Amino acid sequence: MDIKTKHNIGDAVWFLDDYRAQCCKITGVDVQVLGTSKPFVQYRFCVFPPVKEEHVFKSKEELIKYIEK
Image (spheres, one colour):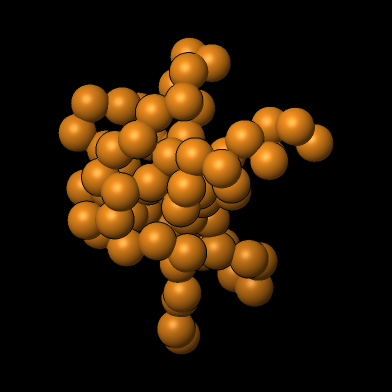
C-alpha cells in the first residue's frame, strides 16, 4: 500500500493554533489506516500539538482562503 501525504517532514507549513496563524516545520507524520477507509494523516511539530492534514497549508494565503469559506 502506498500512502501519499500533502507535506513532508521538514516542510514549513501554515496552520491555526489557538485562533492564530502559525508557520512551523513538520517534525513528524502520523498515519492511521483502518480497513479500507481513507488514511488519517496528521502532522507533528516541536512546539505545537498535532494538526490534521486537512488543516495544514503550504502558504499563509492558502490558510486565509480556507478560513474565508
